Length: 172
Ligand SMILES: [Zn+2]
Ligand SMILES: [Zn+2]
Image (cartoon, rainbow, N blue to C red; front, side, top):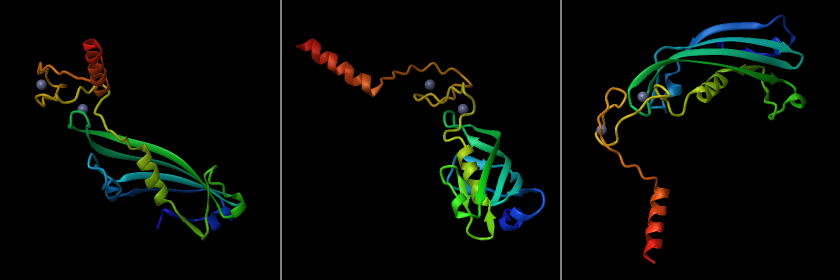
């Protein structure tokens, strides 16, 4: 399994270990109805051994298709992210605050870290563009494509309360 690294061998071994590969991430996106992968995640990692563990640097990229949260149109965008994780085999060197993970066995499975950082890199609310004008709440037209001319009265619920307050005040 290429994403499982034998940390004890690396700690005492020669130079860094590098690996490039692909991971199918469809199951990682199962909870997101607004994102799907158009291909595998490309992963390129370097693991460098130290006296008591290793440091892993990882670059990842994947082509994604999102559903815009404003206009509901699908759009494609690559996602690139990088991360570093540090591991130690000595309990005294472990430090969760510094994010130095203690490894209790001989090997480290890096896949959970690759997934965790993917989830962190994904936008919570995908939008096709910062200037996306979304759908008209009155007629449903895509306002990026045409100006439907509907008039919207938007009253902030807090302001609505304030309006009542002033009415009440005037009637006294
Ligand atoms: Zn949009
Ligand atoms: Zn409209």
